[in-house]
Length: 416
Image (cartoon, rainbow, N blue to C red; front, side, top):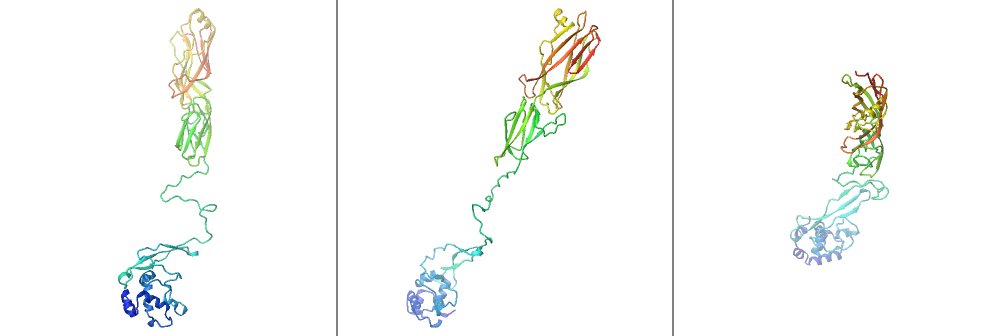
């Protein structure tokens, strides 16, 4: 570096070396003959140029006044070194304490370049120039994808992405449906996916594993919010029930129709003959009942017989009632009997007995027996009559008695 540069330490030093004030020196080099060699510059052009390179235009302007171009950049009409002040505009004085904001530069195919100027200390410059220089920070480049630009919104815009750390939205299935599953198999082996069930029967429903909100227009419960599986009990009367599932994310609803059927009839089968004391007239048997139909489960109901109307009597039994005042009314069990999962229940006692007066002769008596049911969880109410059973009894002149109830029968000789 030239000796003149090391001698430049303050405005006073510049005045001693050149004989003019710094701002006057700056004016003299702008208007002087630029054809002299570097060693012959009046203010030491090389010193002023080095000051611009080291301290920056702002620091130089604060010291010697505003400048237009570096003197070396105008020598012989061409630049020998990169111009430290490329802008043709006059640099306005700026406070040394004021930061320089970042600038964004469009780099074309190279992306966006951000340039930031910051203050840094410049070794070798004492006094108020120390630490007053501007320096351009390393440019930071943000690559952009090649090809046509992608719109930020509208057609062709990318889908919105969730914010970092946020929970992703629940996926909405493309298709789902409701399936019904029996809790207890039907006695006749009908598949568990059946949609025909018995009164009071409980089934399970699901929506393909999706968590949905359930609702039913009949039965219990009427609603089941936010669950993947819905346990539902049919009402105690027959008919059609609609169960609906609504997906909480998409709002799409699906429904399933469930056919609810009541019992239709009871079939009886004799289990055993009941023993009677010797000399007793009559016959008694123990029966097992089966509630039909068998393609559904009636394991959630109980059954019970009613006394029924006055029996129809002929012959000997009619004389017993009129002449001897013997009551032949039907005496059923007063309690409801539970029906098992296979639709069977036990037991029913059917028959007639007594010491009847002589002479005996042929006769018949018929009972019409209403039968009702109700849900097993119901402890009150009379339930619903669903069938009427017939029980017939006959006697001959010898005292032999035959009792028949829905195909089940017993015959007992007189007094045995």
